[in-house]
Image (cartoon, rainbow, N blue to C red):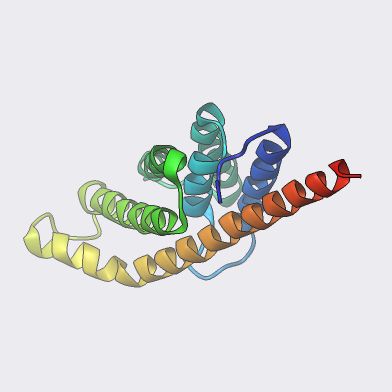
Length: 178
């Protein structure tokens, strides 16, 4: 199964799934169980590179405006941009295993970058090795939820896209035969 979009209709489907994911970020959810990393990875794999690198940033900007600003927004936005790049990198040979690894990589990247930002730029922890360790240790429950959300929403986005794409290809072949 080729996961990238091959025509405008499939590109539109990909964008529609991304927008649905953006709305899901705004609905009540368990802490850090959101579709944003999955949206970034999905966009990188499915959409054209220009759209893939723009749409997740727009999703974050718009939804952050609704949710409210936070001091680490540049790090979170940058992390999602990097996850989109992971998607673009695996696009040509995207298979379930690579998508799974891309989702894991995106979760880990977000965890490392944002918690490093918390440690460096906020005064929640002492600026020493003990504080560094404590920062990451205290973030593990959030990482668990992020990872679960990233894997769940990646499966949903890529699964729905694959099913609809496969169905539409079969439907167009059936319609074209007498």
